[in-house]
Length: 485
Image (cartoon, rainbow, N blue to C red; front, side, top):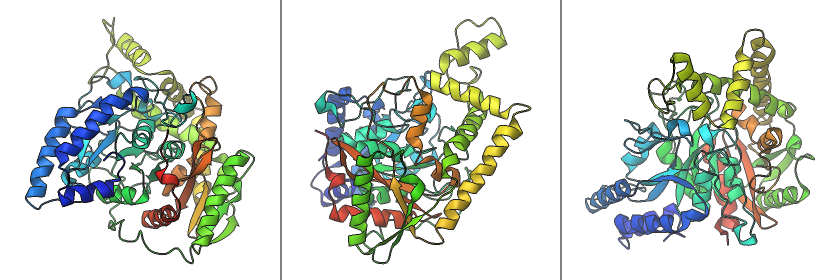
């Protein structure tokens, strides 16, 4: 059963070949037996999962099932889950048990899905390798047979590794600068970052509020579409959530691609991309031409400024958002503080990891008097230029295609002493978040036995078109079915 997709498991449950309790128990047993190799989970919620499975079986017996009723999955440990610990990968929230559900969590509960637990992540979603977690680094299931431990990408690395290792059929993720697409690419799975405002951020612990967006991570585009049917929609609890009708994302998956106009941003096929990676990406694009699509080169002239702008805006927003973790109301508090100032300073010094502290300091500096105009305001102006580049490109083409990452998964520890080198791993993903448009990663080949992701980028609210393009590609290739050894 662990080799089946969400769509296949839903059909198995519908036919009565397996019950949700049996299915959930199988995944829990596999998770407990196998995850020692990957460290992809922070919390396994066995009792609650089995209770949800029993309830799902009762719903199916009563004829009240949805496609998700009884299907196991996992949440990235950034979504608040009522009664289940939510740590955000940090010591700061080691013992935090939310008294409420995030909207995404509540939506999956309402659909009857079974949550097996919470997946590991970079601390407060800050990282590109899932090595900054207080609960230990996550290991990519790919590359283990060679003896090399590779990173799964970040920050949703636990979700990506768990899906790749067949520990869960699907998992939620979040994407602030590439944190769904990059781990999906490095682990050989499918991941979608929706349009900003398409998925509610209520109950999703904030890193950078104008950039964060939740999305699906699964093995196939069809499964990602099934997840989007649950995740997308207006939520009055989130003031940035957009009130717009949600289509059935599975309805258009099988539409032919003849006439699809694909743009290749020349800035994304540069010397930053390894030749072997470029070859795999171009091979994938040739498959689209065989399916009837046309290809032309386009330009995103301000793309080169994206990393500089992002690493001012995102840390500035993180500095503001993370000020709430002060030891007063909830979360970690230092022992025996001498006074209030001692409590604030020691709580934050002891509770946050190195990367989080680095970004808080950078963000606080960028927002400080005398530097706000020079850094933060200028970065926001650059952001507008980047957004306009995409708007101009979509006047000529339907979608853009590019690599997701410049290299395959790198070795654990390889970039830990060089933050800039780590930040450059997101060189092809960050501009999409700054513009707020949707994009996804689709498995598209192997380099040195490690997965390569093809990035498909769309105009605002074009998730259905992206999923259609990904699904049609997956009908003629088998990269999404390849398993780590």
